[in-house]
Image 1 (cartoon, rainbow, N blue to C red):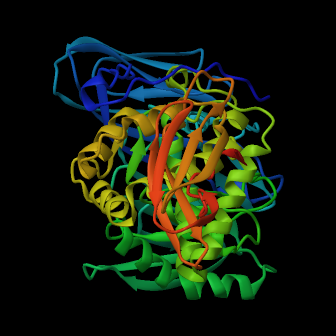
Image 2: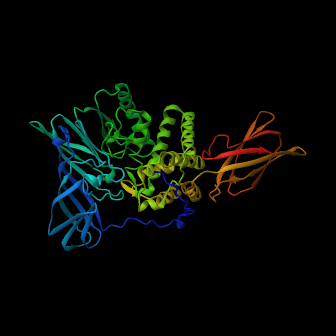
Image 3: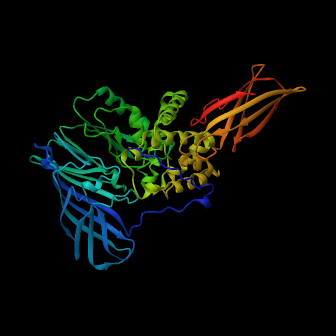
Length: 541
């Protein structure tokens, strides 16, 4: 159910005015999850959802504490026992309370081992059907099939050991350390080299899965394996096309942003239980069945930078994931098919937003503490489409050199790589990278609900040998926001020549005067659609 949100205008005009973030408070930081699961029976009739798991968690205390709290669904998970020094536990209301009989001192490194059962139930994150098993965690699904600190700000290493029948292929995050076959059983061991948020943890597996692999050499010379898991009967031409363009795509984004940031890249097509087009799990992207679509691949792959390497701090910052991935999809189209194809793609994104029934801000501060329904959180018209158009307009405001220089600085920033960022921090970084005080731009486009409706006027008069153009800018909207933007004006002259002027319109009923020595015959406002999120009416006085 979509919800209409009241506008809360951001105050981010300059760096020193950035509002403090109400961050999630926690007193420990998870360093590593080490999960061992017996999935053998899940691939055999009647394909149960139940399995036994042993989860070892290593964590660092950030304060003196006597208890840690983990997310663990009371519906789907049963905690059997927990090993550790002087530990007791209670599992209630989707929370696992682990109590220590003695105070654990700040900055201690501790481990607990949790033995648990996943019930034979459908939980919306752990999927089993006809020999296929996969997970899909975003935004808070990991807690349904493994105890964890299920918040994007907590990034940890992940290791998986999984037992399956010998005819099952199983993929996960990171690199395959080994797969040992004993009789009718395979023991898989996957391990990450880089930390990840729980919503990006994945298992994708199937009896008689098909697997192809290619190697790609990164800009710094690393050999990156790229895995393609697919189902029998899928379109081979689509799959082969994606395999063929993958090296070019990896190089394109690596040169545009920073070198590919992970140890592996991979894709796995799933079945009809996966209701999305794709999910950007770190190093193993999930795709809908037979969805070897070039633009979808570009979108999900670009998340490895925007979402996976630099991860949203809270779900209020989801536009930093999906807006950038949608925009990057457009950049790939521009690279492959040219500038006009890119512009058409961005016009389509703008039109998606115009056609949306329920409009709310891109950035919603209240989502930090309460995540909305998934249809609102991942609203295609706003969080994806409008956000991407805002980034396109930022590109136009800054110019390509400054804009792409800022993105390269952002993705190469060692203080951000493999960490988290909030919307306020992102704006501060962009201001720093560009040297431009563009807080006003983010204020209006992230907090505004609709778009400007321009009602502009112009007149052409002659005075002696000079021609005078008077311009009047006015806006109408229901937001009490005046959208400030640089505005391109194109003047066509009687002799066939033309001139382009850029003016900065920052208030209502604003007048500008241009003077020329030759006769203008036509005036065009924003002739190249650099302000895509607008409606405009122009009248000659």
